[in-house]
Image (cartoon, rainbow, N blue to C red; front, side):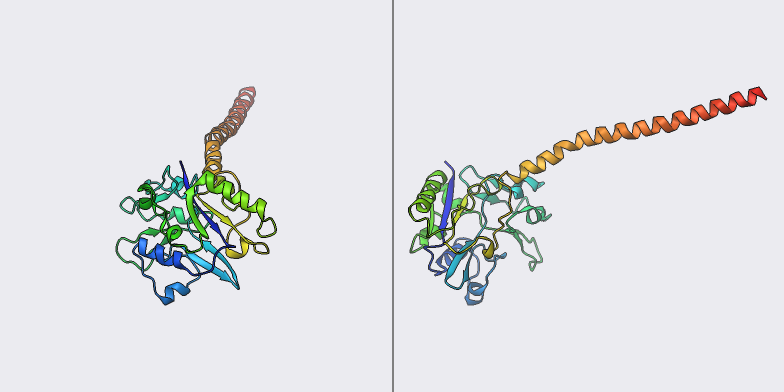
Length: 255
C-alpha cells in the first residue's frame, strides 16, 4: 500500500526539528546559517517557512506519477510502489531535465561541486520506508504536525479534520489531486493560502507525464500530415511544370 506524509500547518510550532532530522538522515550540514535559510537547496531538502505566526513546510511532493522520472533519459529517478521518488546518482548524467520539468521546483543541483555534482531532493526517506519505519521528519515531530502512514488513511484523516473544524482550515487538501496526486498531503490554516508559501494553485489535476504523452502521441500524425502536405505541394508544382513544358512543346510544333 502506498505511503504518504500529512502535514497540518495548524499544528506546526515552527521548531524546525523536521529540518534537523532530515539533515541527519541524509548526512547534510546543518548550522544556524542553514537553519535561517527560507528555501530548499542542494543541502536543505525540507524547509519550514514562516510568515508571522503561520508555518508551512516545503519538501519534494513525491508525485504519484512524477514528471521528473518521466523526463529522465537514463532512469535515475523512479517512483517506488511505496510512495518515495528515488534518485540513483550513479545513473545520472547531469542533464537536469528533472529540474525544468518539476511543477514544484524541487530538484536542486550541486552547482558548487566540481566533481560528480548530483541532483538533490527529498526521497521521503525511502530506505526507512522500505524497512517499515516512519520518515525521519514524521518520527521527530513533537506535535504530530507531520504524520506518516498509508496514503488512503491519511486522506481520510485529513478529510475528517476539515469536516470537524471547517473554520480552522483552508477547505482543500493540497496534493490530493494536484498533478494526479502526490505522496505529500498538506493542510493550511484558515486565512492562509498555499500560494503565499510558494505552492502553485494553477496545476492540472491530471498527471503531467500524461499531458506530455498526449502531445508526443500527436507527433506521428503531424509528421504524416506534414509529409502529405509537402507531397501535395511538390505534386502540384511538378505537375504545373509538366503542363507548361507540354504547352511549350505544342506551341513549338505549331510554328
